[in-house]
Amino acid sequence: MHATAASDPRHRTSGHLIHWAAGYDFIVWFLLRGRERAFRQRLLDLVRLRAGESVLDVGCGTGTLAIAAKHRVGSTGSVAGIDAAPEMIARAQSKARRAKAEVAFEHAVVEALPFTDAQFDVVLSTLMLHHLPRKARETCAREIHRVLKPGGRVLAVDFGGPEKGGGIVAHLHRHGHIPLPEIVGLLRDAKLNALETGAVGLRGLQFVLAKREAAS
Image (cartoon, rainbow, N blue to C red; front, side, top):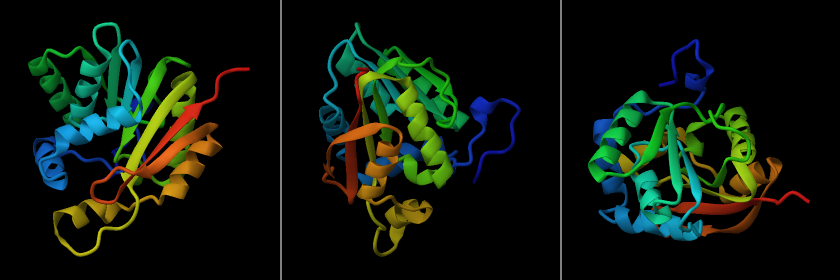
């Protein structure tokens, strides 16, 4: 389902929205075979997240990765998360309260990030890009570049190829996949240069770690 028309551009997206927040965490658990905690830590290790850094999770879903990032950056760091589905943001806020994690979750879209230029050290994008049509992906990549500090890092993780067979995982792939070279090119066109690429190690997931070059 695509977003319905709204007067506020922060809430308009051409991407596919997932509204069923209540079942989303179970789907992730199933997809990762119960290894979601190790998966989150793997992603934070890949992006080399450190204490005191500022982080944005775009397409944050129910907020689990953003909350884990807050634990990693500590009291001197900050974490924000945005998602185009208000149901996801409501669940993320509830999770953060229960975890006593200070994360700023906001209902917004990746095509118009509601943040100032050069605000974040790190941007995370996990299983989100394949929900966007090409033009929206390009806009999203430019927005990520804009909100990253010079020298800042972005970690993009997505399905590298179609899932074979049927079942629930194949159902998740119905919105597509993005070959790794395409993600690299997408980020490169937005002046985000790949530092490292490869397999995450689960379900054909691929990652690109890229950097916004420091100002000369």
